[in-house]
Length: 597
Image (tube, rainbow, N blue to C red; front, side, top):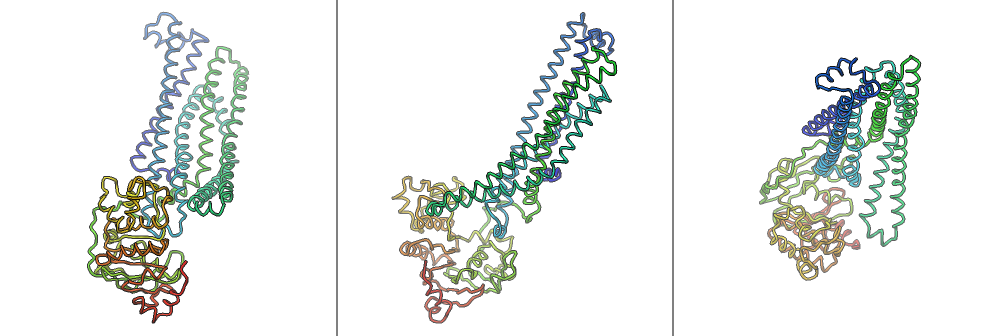
């Protein structure tokens, strides 16, 4: 577990951890010195003649030039007090350092986990629940840092203090100290052995119900319109409340389990003070001997009990939260190995002057055996418009994703002007692409930022924004209807806009970069007939300088395409112009007769 924690840290973070550990040791030494100073101070109070009989105190008394025992006693008290204050100040600074270290690791580890997820290939997301990925970044990283990493630091800090205190007690009263160690240690070890399995089981259950909480929230808010129309508020509240109640119950029970040994040991410890008195009296120790030893053990117990209780609570936290650590470690280090490097914004677009060739492409989705695309061979010439039509599940969108470079074929090649598309030149090829999906995601932000989508404000080309909006037939609406025009905030997912308006902003987003190739995946399916016609008229004005790849449900949108490919079961069932296919291809006629929803 410690190895996993260290692997989660970057080299410079491990150095900070080691420095923090050194500070913990120094703080522990000074804290123990403060406790150790109690014994001579109490001895002086009970018997000032110790100044003369103890060679170390006598040397200090003489060297510092004291003339009477009372002034030396006052001096000793001040020294003890200073040690205590310094100990507390250092303890505070150490706690601050631990808190700072822990919360900064929440930031750094969650950022790296986000980077790891973001840079995964597209197929990584095919079988992933994005709500769970978000939960891992936001919730589980904090759980690991606060529930595993911080407790380990606390064990180190408290453990050093406990070791020094026990060492000091052994030097003062060996037999008595060993008895105390065996008694207290045995109580905690027995408690932990009884509880560790329950903690592990509850830790796994916590991770599961926490995932259910996040998933319920994600489903509810992602389809809030449908939820409100159908009146399903109560259902989704209950769907969240059930795992939420389990989550609360698991955490509260675990908290109580972690406190049980502390209460037991407290009874043992304070009962032990009485046993110490009886033991000292039984061996014939007088009051002058009894007071310093009793004071030392009482004060040591006062300082020791919180440390031991905290150590056990930390061990319980680590055991309880170990499942989150395992998940986090797996996702960062044992899942798909990728090179997380930022996209090179300065990379030049790949030369594209002639054609795109899909050469005997076959694709099989992960964890399946049946090919979705089978030995597909298609040539797409520059500045032409082609369409893929077919029934749902025929493989149309998969072909688009392969052209976009989101999916890599299992067999076959993609050639751009006879240059094979590889991992090395993929970014260069994607500089040529504009993508318009069926469902446009819009941020709760301005029109400008939604069109430019990811471009820093200081690099936004406003002329290009307006040009793209005009081509998408949304400019007039923005200027005439919106209160702040291009600076209008449109709400989460563009909730303040109609479906057609949202789609046209998505089209403007794809056009903003002036791509050579536009891929439209059911891009106009949410538009009414008149608006769809306006948008396609605008896009077709670019046909002489753009290559259009269209996946369509409504065949009216592909009537003017240069070539239409009919896809059935991942293979080409026909190819040609609209009227040609309508006459010669049964599959195309069947699609044409299907009612448009």
